[in-house]
Amino acid sequence: MAKQKKQPRPRAETPKGFRDYFGAEVETRKAMLEQITKVYHLYGFDALETSAVETVDALGKFLPDVERPNAGVFAWLEEDDQKWLALRYDMTAPLARVFAQHRNDLPTPYRRYAMGPVWRNEKPGPGRFRQFYQCDADTVGTASMAADAEICAMLSDTLEAVGIPRGDYIIRLNNRKVLNGVLEVMGLDEGTARDAVLRTIDKFDKVGESGVRELLGKGRLDASGAYIDGVDLTAEQAEPVIAFLTSKGADMTATLENLRAAVGGSQVGLEGIQELETIAKLLDVQGYGPDRIEIDPSVVRGLGYYTGPVYEAELTFEILDQKGRKRQFGSVAGGGRYDDLVKRFTGQAVPATGVSIGVDRLLAALAAKGRVNTAPAGPVVVTVMDRDRMADYQAIVGELRAAGIRAEVYLGNPKNFGNQLKYADKRASPVAVIQGEDEFERGVIQLKDLVLGAKIAENATLEEWKSRPSQYEVARADLITEVRKILDADHA
Image 1 (cartoon, rainbow, N blue to C red):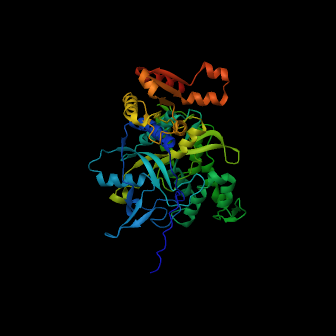
Image 2: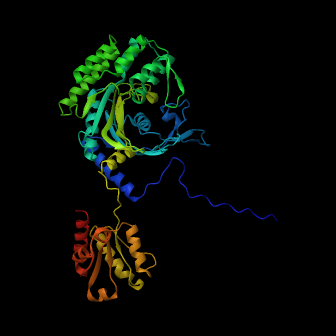
């Protein structure tokens, strides 16, 4: 009989493009999402939690730069009914399905927020993962520009609520209808040339005005030296696009005038400008001025998807990149009006507008500003001096927990007390509770302030150690009071 081949052990590794999140990271994200939830709730939005799995038909073809409906998503075929299913790639497509499915039971307009992971089957890279968190807020069922103004105001309040101060961010507004007016002036109807111009415009933030001019014309060399073919427009034909992208003036009035010149007599373009003006006025009466929200025609990302106003939240403070160079942090949120998404299900146009916050990006921004505590806050550790007295130690930890203090009993091998303190350090514990037989008989307990002890061991003199002992004895009855004193001092 042939010897059975031994199965190799699986490698303990995270799949490519995915990552694991540990205690402090999860807690920090949770705290930030709670702050965002408070703002959304204040504005009257309700929570919605949809399934992580949708049919591919429901998701539709809305991922950028893909040709097949299920390209870019994690999809599989159900054998029983031969339906393709996929993990959601954003929060908006599921919202469209939910509204279409439950529209007779939902209020209109329907205001909802949603938070959770989404998945994209794309090539991963530095800081680019296949699973990431999104935090969305949308209003479905109204064409009023007040809904768009409200989203912008709420986004501004949200950034400030989580710790991005005024002056460190700007929310920039644009409108797809204005671009449609520019394309109309150029005589570009639906077709290959129009799509090529849209793709070129979408590169404005990367290549700038000169790069867009070249790409609208004969083409240009990219950073790698490769030649990129252009759209082959003449300079005169390309001028309306350049005028649109560079329309930002010294103030809102100047910007709107420049946009009116760019769209000429196009009615759809003038309608887009009127919508921007309406949003700006609605924001102004609430105190949201150009220091927080401004009209900026250079906001072009996503214009192929949106049908009206678009907005992008950009953080303006500088950080150092991986090569030590200064650069602005950049965008952390974006959104706009998408009036055609629900129509896929109902056949009827349903106006909608919303915004999506990149949770990981926003957390990274807060960390760069020193606004989040990435150090884990561990539990109080009750050490075990005598395994036969486990009931006494459980009584201590039960008392701590009843007082609302996070705590645990050391459950490893108690033989080596040094290993228990090493464990407490690894758990980032602020306090170790110590009670041997002698302390038990005398009705006392030893408390070791591990945070203070670490500070003293790192940079204090022997005299300072004596004047501020990190371990001392207290009455057993004073356990809760004394532990709270240490916790309060460590977080002062």
